[in-house]
Picture (cartoon, rainbow, N blue to C red):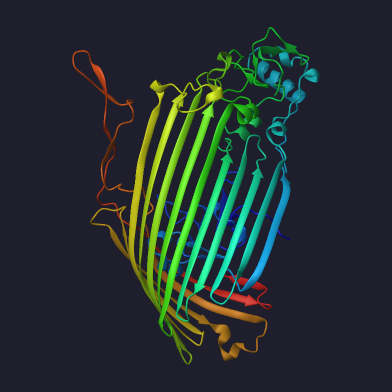
Length: 590
């Protein structure tokens, strides 16, 4: 059965032993966390290193799953150590489709509807009214007159109002072709995923071009370009007061929508009482007011359907570009020199706003009489230059290979945020806001890596295997005394199925014993934590000077530098076996 997935992280989910994929949220286009053999760090990131066609890449949603040829996961230190400090939590290798000789066109389309499979069973209106009034009386409080006749109260399903059937469509076009000298693969993808919570959605466009050149018998080159453009409408789906939890807190006797504008109440028969002030009709939805009896209504929560649909705006858009090129020269048979230059560019934009709520709703849950409009930009560019020299040769039953190289990387990023107030609802923009209350913040974040590595391996007739790796990494995240770390690993293996005494056991296709030991480093900490830094937070912290005690914005220390911060090291010992039986239909890895 073929299923449609949004990203390759979903393609991994439940498919590989030792790899755990967790949804961080249920939003369309929401992020996921991948853990390889559990948590590897207490204080730093536990995300693995993602390598797409040899390029370090961070945004999982920027890769169209239809472009993927295969996914490999390096779990133990011996396998991952060639990638150095960034591989302390494992490595996910993604290989995309390349062009082939001839000409081929394929088109893939998917459309469907998503819906909530199961809602949490709650009390209906009559049950709630009876129990709520009983609880009030038992607590020595007067009953709510609106609930005096449980058989006539309103019965509203807040979950049904918040959740909605959501359409999803996904289209992918792939064109491949070429000859002896040049092969090309071009793909285009479009994804439109509605959210099952009102007010949420996700759209993404992707394009990829992979071209390979066979310049001569000994010279090869290639170009890869990948672009992803996305827009996501977010809602608050996580946390104690998220839209989902708020729907569970809301009483079924409280109306959800109304054509009334302004204050009103409810009678015991469920009809509107124009003289009441417990509810307020605003923008088509019903909200609790600040006049409502706190014994009758939940605190710090209000109509999650109206808030998600019309009151809050939270939009994120991003553009991600990857470009990579390589040149490979085979000097003599088995000896290859390769140089790869990778460039990535990311640009993100976010805008979120809150409308002006009527005075009766001021400071009720997320409702506020002061409108806000905020924008944020983040930009990053990264270059990665890798040069290697590799040798592989067979001498009878003896097979040897070795690779050595250098890996240099630099990332530069900038973030700017502008928070504003009192922008008119029909002109939400920075320029339309109150200039006296604008708060602007921003910061750069740069780091670099310089690494040297080598690996050698030997096997006898594919039966006895041994390999070793050493890598020296330098990171700008550490001070001069702790900048470099050296990490190594080794592994051995015995493919028992290749022995003569195993030839008669036909149902065993492969059986290998293996053991490895190695160390990898982790440098995933904020840059320059070894230095003390100072900041001005727009006046929250102030000094007072002179006889008039005039307040002056203060510059204060926001990080106490520690020059002894150094590499986090992870040491792993792995012993296990791999078994394939029944024509490799059953695989066991321990």
